[in-house]
Length: 174
Image (cartoon, rainbow, N blue to C red; front, side, top):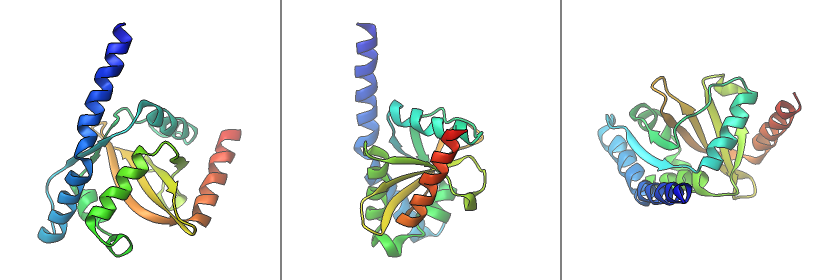
C-alpha cells in the first residue's frame, strides 16, 4: 500500500510541475528576447522515471555521469544563448516551449546519444520525429550542482537522426 501512495503522490507532484511548463518557458524566452539578458533560471518540466532510466542507459554507454534529477531546469545561460536561437524555424517562443515540452512528455520520444559536435559535455540528445525531413530535438545535460538542464531545442534533419541511431546501436553492441 505504501508504494501505491508514493506513486500517487509522485504523479500529482509531476502533474503540478508540468501544468504550467509551457507558459513558464515561454515567459522566460520572451523576457530574454525583450531584455537581451534573462537572469532567471526556470523550472521547466518533470520527466518520468522511465525516461530518466532510458537517458541514463545511453549515458552509461558513453561513460557520462548519470542524471539524478527528473526536474528539468532551463538555466538563464541556455535561455539567453541557445533556446531563443531557433525562433525563425519555430515562429514564436510559445512554439519553442511547446515543442520542448512535447519531446519530453511523449512516450514515443527516441533517446539518442549526443552528437560528436557537442563534445562530451554531459549532454544527451532527445528526439521525436514528427515531420518528414525534420524532427524536434532537445538536449539535456547535467550541471555541477547535479541539476538536469535543458540545454537546447532545435529541429534536426532526419539524416542526422539516422546517424545518431546508428551510433546508439554501435554503443549498445559494446
